[in-house]
Image (tube, rainbow, N blue to C red; front, side):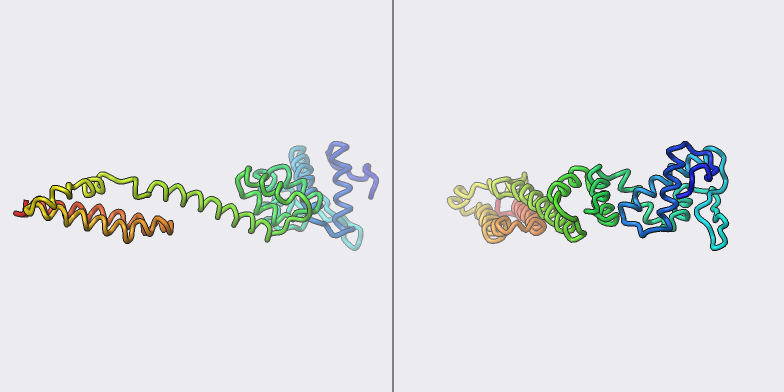
Length: 251
């Protein structure tokens, strides 16, 4: 590493030291995701400080003749960092997303090399409580994309079962709407005793048959879409039957 005095840049001592370190590392070794995240954040700080102090060019290395290679400090900071590190904008965007939306445990796991930037980016897109639950579930060892997918699938299945149970409880046969109550409350006892009111009995038998053969069966199978369709059909048919009865001469 060159002597800090050789770097003629308007940077604080700490920033100048970091600049010297990461500039040297850039050419001397292959970076891990932990290195990439760390250096991206440090380059961002350095470039912002330089731009604030009016610097228009930044030396990022030397050519084969020993001359400085400079990049212009114009435009968005992320794009300058991308050029400086020779890393894609997309990768830097993922790092920023993890920093902005992820819980602290994600960055810690990346530093420990238990988590890649790509996988951390997927986790950061989850709700904070889900991120925490996942990191607690896999707190030992490396976290791979397959484990994240498995966690998300399990979470989805749990939520689906809860929603299905809630909807099924609402659609139990004991819970009847106004239309069903109208159909079910027809006085079949009086209908059996009065030949002029036999149409009442037809309606009651029709509804009960539909309920027993289809509605209850679907509730047991938790087939929510079909339950909703059948429920609407029963109500509509019951009201049509009863309307026909009221308008007929069988009353």
